Image (cartoon, rainbow, N blue to C red; front, side, top):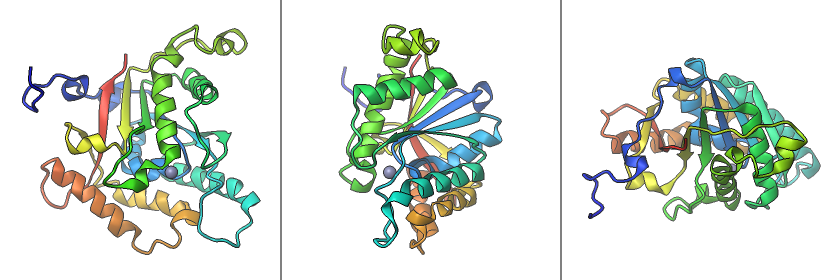
Length: 259
Ligand SMILES: [Zn+2]
């Protein structure tokens, strides 16, 4: 069969996301503080508004971030944790967990997979939101090697590690964490939304909260006078791709069934 858009033949193309009302817990897994706010802040606000308990799992402390060469490096990790906590609060998220890997050197290692699997089994989410493991040649900034490593590791945990009781057996035997199947997974920042049917979330009404959350990352966005302009431009382009009327803003995801 030829692979044409009119002949859906992948789960991504046929899958309709679960209604938010059926999701009790969502787990977001990212490489750095601020990634979730750039990629999905408006969507997170719609989830918490709908009563979903959202947990962030952040693989690094973002200690290689920032622009101020004078700022003491040893203080950066603490500052970025505090900024992320504040940003999370602004979107209704109160549970932020850090894995403490060094920023800029993240690899989709077996150790990282164990640590992410641990959090999946602790949180037991119905929905996971992860970064894309693929490089985007059109917008290279979102393909930071840490983002791709976090995405690769997180997807390996969604399937198969977290659900396989024999993967990372110490989690079950020493920590009493049973296997967990996450039935739905969202991928943000993926180049595939340009040619596969994406799922678009209307963030027109939560845009201001997204910007407010991004502003909490002062060490990263303090110098960005045009923050709302360029973020708005991305979101307008998504809405346009979705075929929505002018003036709407959207965040775009690939959503797949992972039960
Ligand atoms: Zn990042």
